[in-house]
Length: 287
Ligand SMILES: [Zn+2]
Image (tube, rainbow, N blue to C red):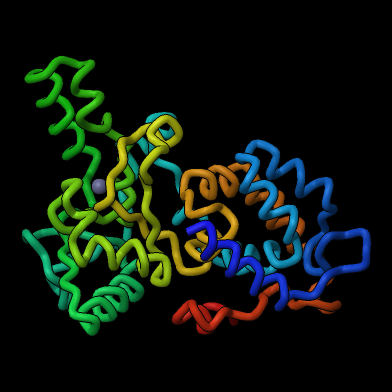
């Protein structure tokens, strides 16, 4: 994985032009010192990847700033969505050619084109991607949680299930695939997703070894749609750690948007960057 990230990063660097002005990137009104303070809370290896390649990073970031911020909402034990959060564009997955293990699953329409493209790509490679769980309302989470509390006690219930409002499934962009068990990792679909989900904007939310960071145990079956540009940025610059990408955007998006508006986009880089050939569909996202 590290080798792949380094290779991709190296390719990116060779494809980006540097800036000789004081500003780190001609498309952004931002200095390297300002960028350094934005990435300061991140782990050292992520900071280094970004600060070593600031022009390419900001090129890529501009694509992410075009994506609605709602796709990057944080939902975890420290960020509660609240009972009122209901996505407005939910669609029924039963209306589309997808393998499902039950009826009535809903997903946000904004995630649908890439979701269908991913399922079709898997199918063409002989992989059966089974959708097992998607949107869960606040009310549904509350019912499950309260049942666990009454059966197991509050302490154990907190380990077994998210409190209402703390689940990414309420966003309408999270999907559980296959068996929803650890054994999914060794299945063809589980392995295919690890290799390919990012190409279609999906990101593994709870990777192995990051329980203390994410607040959730390793879930090899749980992916969240964050858009193709964001999944690319996450993979190359955030070492495939969704948690840190979301925290970075949550803290800095407003400042970065302002810096992007303030940058001189008629000078030098157009702020869009070249899509790598390894990211299918990236080209149509750069307009
Ligand atoms: Zn899940």
